[in-house]
Amino acid sequence: MNTNIITLNQYLNEYFIKFEVIKIIGYKQLLINKNNRRFNHKKVILILILISLGSVILSGGVSAATISNNQTNDSSQFNNCHNPYHISIFDSSIGGNVLSNTAITQYISRTDLSNKIFNMTNQGSIILKFGNGNGPKVLICAGVHGNEPQANIAIMQYIEFIKDKNFNGTLYIIPFAIPQDTALNTRYYNGSDPNRIANINGTPGWKIVQFAKNHGINYLIDVHSGGGVDANGFIYINSKSTNNEKKLVSYIVSKTNCSTGVEDTDDPGMIRYSAHQYGINSITLETERDNIPVMDAVNAEYKMIHAGTKYLGFP
Ligand SMILES: [Zn+2]
Image: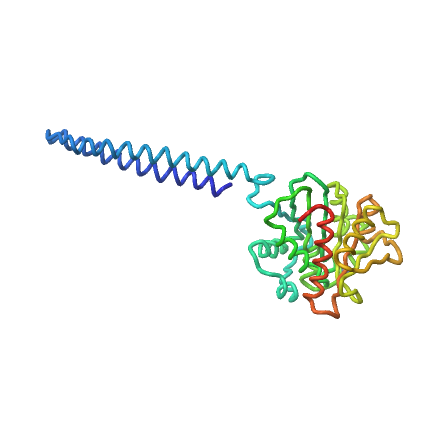
């Protein structure tokens, strides 16, 4: 939007100046001629032509600028954003330099968007919002455990894949759930496992679940990596899973050949189970962290994420 306003001003400034210069030169010439009492008809005609040419250029310039401005208005996305997404700070109390984590530095491509995300995560966790709002509302968060970079790398790949796309529904993504923990490559948040305290008021996981609840999220996908996971990945499902959760999981399994399992206990401190208790369909994705090459694990995670988003109607 701003670029087009500048373009319009540039057009106006440029052509007004040209027009004024032509006018001044023209009138000066007329004055000189009049003072000299040697009225040159050819010169006067030439000056008049120059003045009218200035007017034509001026009006043409303005209308061209107006058209290009209107076209931008027609194609602009929600909230007049230049890009089809919004990005903002989600939790300003847990910022950190995620580039201190060598896996993040090594395996995430540097683009304008990823650089922006890396910069912003110094101030807190961030949230991206995609989609036009007409359809399901989905939240994906990654890296609530700061030592599971495969989760962050895979979700950043998916963000790069959809960043220019317009689509139905609303997709929120929190790519680094606790940047300060990713920076330290640690599982623990202030000495506790953050995925066991999501039911405690004010914790990072609690804020994610409350956001999901307050924004009418239909599906929450929590992305992790860990030890002893099949090469194609693994999905944790709630023991009393809803039909919608089951359908989502079977679709992902059909596309990726990943395994699934139910946690021994439904821990209310887990983001997945906490969200499920609020009636939000919720699953946990896992990919191998320790025993296969990082990018193999990332690819398995990416396939599960993409199958899930596809099932929910997103690109
Ligand atoms: Zn984890």
